[in-house]
Length: 122
Image 1 (cartoon, rainbow, N blue to C red):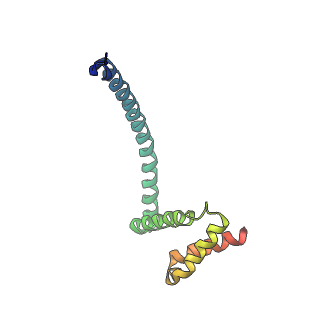
Image 2: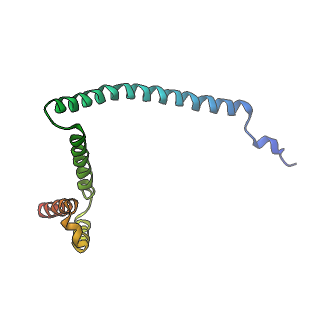
Image 3: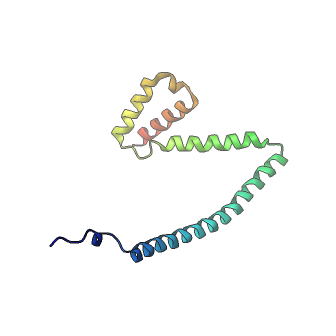
């Protein structure tokens, strides 16, 4: 005799248990996020104070923020090749060379310089 199709569906109790367990975990995640955000606020406030301190010394905030962002982006761009193996670095350098004008731009010069330093150190 064939099984009743209804036997393959989860029970209401199983569904409620699963939902309750997941919602409990979601509440834990929210609590952790709130704790994290409170800690970050303290750090962000200290950062803002440093910008204010720099402004008091005649450094324009807008320009300082732009410079901080630029430096972070440069580090991120430089890190692109960090995990390359030697043959990948060689090919990457070849691509950079063939791009030509790109190497004349500041970011291109930085990438080429970093690749050359990495190749010399290998």
